[in-house]
Image (cartoon, rainbow, N blue to C red):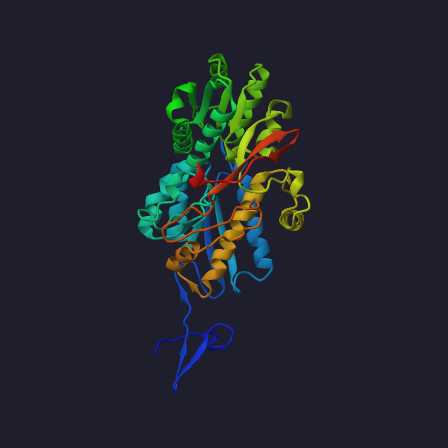
Length: 407
C-alpha cells in the first residue's frame, strides 16, 4: 500500500472517509509541482522598472494581497508563496524569468503576468509545458483561445472590442470626424487598432493620420505634433501610461483640442491623468469595467468601502487614486476564488478546470451589471464595459453597460 502521511487520515480535516460495505475509502489529495499540504506557489512577472513601470504598482498590490491572505490563514489551510520578478517589459527577459519560475521555482501556475508583447513571448512555452497561465494582465484578444491555447486565460475585456466601441461612439457623436491615432508599435497597440478599424468599417477613411512609437522612445512629442498638423478633431490615444500622459500634455501645450479617446489600460488618475495635467484631460473618454476610486458615486458602495479599508490596512503606502490598485485587488480576488474551488486537488489540470467554471460570478469592484463568466469554450472572463468621461479630477460614467456581443 502506498505510504501516506498521517495527516491524510484525520477524518473531517484533510480527507473524507466513505464507508462502503466493510471497506473505508479515503479521498486522496492530488498535487502537481508548486502545491503541497502547506503551500501553493504562484509565479508572476511585472515591469517594476523600464518604460511600463507605472504598472509596477499592480505587482506591489498583488504582493500585499497574498500577504493579507496568508495572515488570515491562507487558502484551505495552505499559505500562498507568491514569487514575482521584474521583467522590465522586455520579452526576452520575460522568457528567461518564466523558465526560471516553471523549471527551477516549480510554480503551480503563473498569474497576471503583465504586458501583451511579454505574454506573447511565453504563450507557446506555457502551453507546451501545460502550466496554467491565468488572468494575464493584457486585454489582447488572443488570450481567449481555448482550442489552440488551453492553458492561457485572460481577465479584462479585450482590446479589440474596446476599439470597436470607441469607433462606433465617435461616429455617432462627432460631426465630420477626422481621426488621428497614436499607437504603441507592438501586439498591444495593433489589437486596439484592428478593433478600431473594424468599428469604423466603411468610414475607415476618416483616419487622416496614424503614427506609432516604440517603448524605447524617450517621448512622443514629435508624433503628437504630426497628429495636430493633420487637422484631426478626434484623437485615439493607444498608449501605456507614461506615453499616454505625455501625449495629452503635449496636445495641451500646442493648443490641440480634439475629442480624445483613451485606452482603458491608461485610465488611472494617479498614473496618467494627473501627470498629463488636469486642464489637458477634461472631457477625455474611456471604457471602464471596474469601479474607479475617484468616482464619488462609489464612496458609499460596500465594495469600495471594503477596498479602501483593505488598502489602508494592508497596502497603506499605495495611492487610493490609482485604478491599477483596484485592478490588482479584483484580479487577485478572482485567483483566490479559483484556488479555493480547487480544494485538495491542486493539479494544473484542475486549476484550469475551476478557472473555466464561473457563472455570472459577482467579483468585488466590478461595475454593477458586469459579472465573470467562463466555460471550457469561453476564456473571456469579463465581456462588458461602460463609457466614462473625465471631469474635474475624476471619471464619471455615462450610458449603458455594453456587452461584447452588442458591439
